[in-house]
Image (cartoon, rainbow, N blue to C red; front, side, top):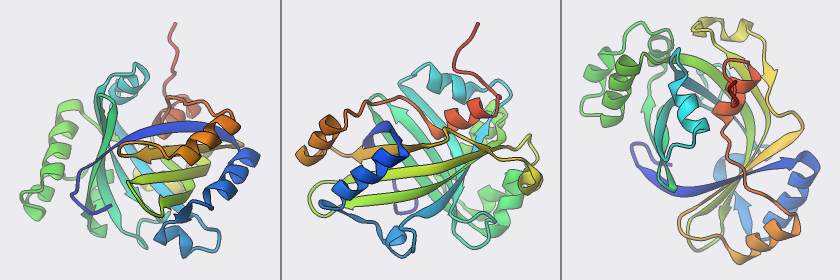
Length: 246
């Protein structure tokens, strides 16, 4: 995804048992190819780390669980556990009616400590003038009192279409989550909790339609769509919030 480019698409999600996910991948390989980043890896997957922002009222969590058709949340994403060997991005991810959208902008490594430890956000306005995403992030941080809340890690095996319209499949496994407790500097000291152990999350991302061959896979493996997010899984696994209320 190009920086500062708004990506809009449909997203369907499925929970798969690990054995089933590998069977589906073998079928997918007949029609799609690994994306360039995963194809360089021996394991054919790459590490993803996302830091999600939330406030003390868990407003983003509630909006997702309630199924609000218009919502958004912010995260910092990287592809390295230490934030120093990989690009770092500030992203906004949300939904507008039936479509999801995502936009991101690249950050410098020396921005991370300030953002994560809430030392100073306003210098970003000077450093990245006319960056609408950063302006919106700072506005929402101040308006909603957002803080770095949890980290979600996983390994992703992504496939892209060989031809035709945009169609992308990602198989995400080994989900781990960490409660930052507003102390990002203690990330590596905190205990990791495995989210949805033994399962793979399949995300289907497309612009207009799903290919007929994938429809056949859905029917063959009796896949059923679920409404879930890694953010929600992490919040529930860490007992920060619950999808059910008394």
